[in-house]
Length: 470
Image (tube, rainbow, N blue to C red):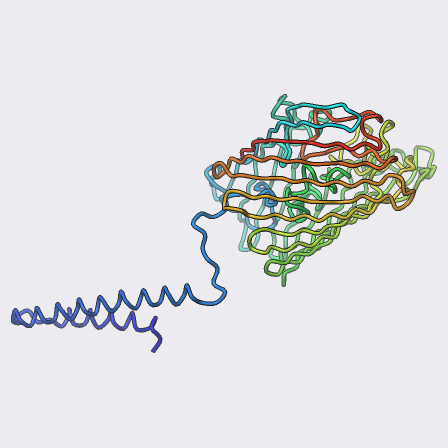
């Protein structure tokens, strides 16, 4: 008989002995039986100790840490994954069968940057890792396997109080400038409609140790983050696989009676993502395609009719004491802002432009393609202390003049469960024709903007920040 199976048998024997004790038993008999019961209890304790020791000695059994890690930069706490909503903490509650959660974060940091031109910047900034935000999300079951869900999320700059995805709140008239969508959960997956994060934005934790934010080479190339009027499907995970499909039709074409396009504000942004997880291993592929408008008010085709694409394969491995990430990007989503050769993205970092048109078809920069490669790693020193780093290169594969490489080192420490401090050192090195600048989760209030400070220059940065999640 297995030792674990002996314990119930011994306990049952002790119970039967006690129950069988007659009321008129002699004192000596009672003493003998009590001794037997105590002996059996000792045997039970001994068997339990042997069972615990055997479990601890079992090969491959992981040691349970004294304190579980509370947060890691590569696992953003506010990501709304497909599936049933759960009570996320003290700011969650239920009413009339529905669950509601108020969430957000405030992330502020001191930023010192120096260009090899000799100029320096000292500034307080918002959103090195997570742009400061607040939001409400919830769900309500409709039937077994079916739920209605929603998420309303607004970003803000904690240093000046302005709303908006950009540092100065240019598009800050939107209360929910980050997300505003309604979803239906089904047994197959989730359908959503509204302003949503792109697949690229959602999966930042799969790209590098800082969640593809401050210091990331892939990040300062430009990340298409979210789009209006986005219809999407997010599958459940089957056999390790999950997929997402998105189509944004904001500013849909208005067709005149003669067949011409009466406006050119159509986004026509398509997205696809496939992700596979098996134990500590993850691999995936994401792609965003933005089409130029079909024609102007006179039906003329755009001057440059090429699609803008962003293709992003990735793989990472969790080795227990940290993770290793490999990621690549193939894209033409970068171009001149009129001053710097790499100052804008046709797909937009926010999905919003002053004209309402993303891919205008009038920008020759869409004919320049880049390859980006990046490697990153982290190491968990203690359950509260994590260090990490990354290195990446950007290669202009068309003209071979806008090349760049950069690297970053960082440390994160959990002061409390929801309060974290961090420090970073980063370097952006531009070749003679390149004009990349540092970028974070939130837009920088103060960044290098002149050719003398950026093109062909090396920009170094030191940052110390504090983040609170709620």
